[in-house]
Image (cartoon, rainbow, N blue to C red; front, side):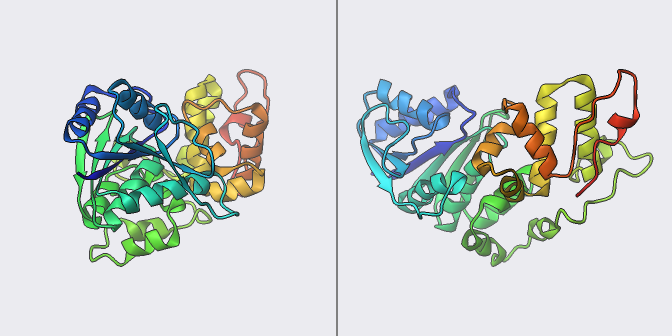
Length: 304
């Protein structure tokens, strides 16, 4: 009997048939399941095992009370350092599960850094993880740190930066001591020196292999504001906030970093006061102009 760490993204609340089949195989094999207590994948997987009347489940939680334990299974409470807040508070249970598991099954929304980071934690301890990319309907087996580095090098710049920001120094040090350099050196550039804007004549298709510059992200935000596209506004604002450093944004706004990640998402619905705080923290401002006026929309702000 093996211990399987099952986790994934909060934004995946419905399990695809591929995942359900794998969960049914776990039941048939009688493996022990360890799972977190969050909404999204954690809750959906708990629901599936509850419907299957599967008892060999342990729910891990940071702190004293699980947020979700649908089957009233045994709860494993993970001690958390007193100063841990937001993402780092809940990550304590993930690290414990990665240490205790023999294998991992991760259900990913294609952008959640926490899920990718859990795969890294498994790889660091020499354990195989199966990563199911729900939007792409793709499955990746990650067996070593080099496999993980090859995988993350194909992810978006946003995911790469988010993973680096959330990883502990110890976790990142393990990557830096690997034999293959991969993408790590490219993440050492700081937001204080934004890349130049798109060269004249260069198209979006020709820049698909490089991350967008600050000016390009700003242009996307301006265009979304001009058209009232709320989804793109949140995506663009979130991208700029991550580019400038979510830790720095959290410190300047006084908001929890985990809350900011949830709010500055395509599905987020932050209060207007939160949007204003974020804009101010990254050196931007909103300006009301009569319809048809251009100046106030062409330059919403500059790097601060």
